[in-house]
Image 1 (cartoon, rainbow, N blue to C red):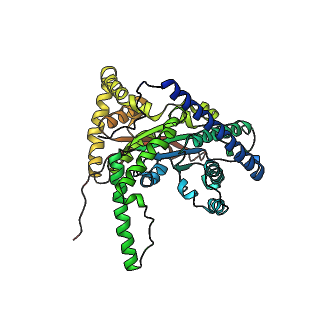
Image 2 (cartoon, rainbow, N blue to C red):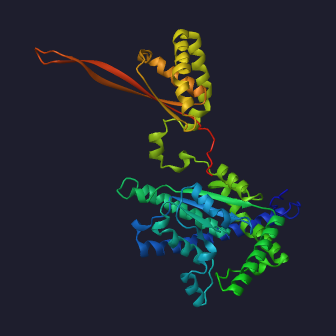
Length: 414
């Protein structure tokens, strides 16, 4: 069983001083974040231009302990959200040309530099619809900077709402997704990854085929792997947990096999239009029912209608059932392999609209899907030789398509 992340035990000793100390630290971090963000934002505004500060519509903040599968599940998460751009891996940004120039000048890539590099990255056109941030935020300062960024994006959204640039400044949607694994699982996966990379690199060196993969020292040492997990719990966990009160928060059990974890992710990423659409867009379509609402009551409504046919329109109902049995079922049976049958009918029983409803409902109850199209044609019958007038009769043809699950029989070839 996976053990939960535990906070510092409450012993009841020196709590006032502890709380005061914690609050002072939080206040200091908040002030630092405001200074950092203000500097970065003003630089961007001046360099790029206010109207070009176009950030992603959606941000997925992906976090988790070492070995939790962030790299493994990123592509699946992006597919689930309909994103096609590459993920933004924060650790990769720290080795970017911009970060390397900072280090070459003797500087350190701290929170200010990370935020500056990240915001410039997010402004790239590829990320206009959304981006996955792998490894951000990791500190309380970065969390505060994220909050300030979202506030700024919302301000831009309102500022440009009634202009021809509005589509570039949509209301942002933020998902925080944390992949949880226990300490034991984290250590096992880190060491397993190390063994696999080590074996792969040996093969590359021996054959000369392939590219060497980075092998972390922590992936070969159990105590180092354990320390990485502890650092995550002590440093990053609080930052991620603080997002719970701010954005859509998804806590995913990542202990199991890949398929099971992906199922857990899908459950967490169910679409919520009221939270993601622009308010004006949502107000426009909110009167329309959701598919799930209709489907939820569909079976009960079908039963109610069928019982109503039997109790209130028995004669017509009997005729429809007999027509389906004698006329439709033989044709459907002949098309069992394809799962699709077409029946044309000129039966005058369908002049009564209730008969068509009965037909569709009976097929639905039996596991079929019926679609009825009504076609009206004028058919010439005679010509008045004196006047040349053509007399025609109206011909009504009901074209009925019945869809169903086809036979699973497969023909083999010798």
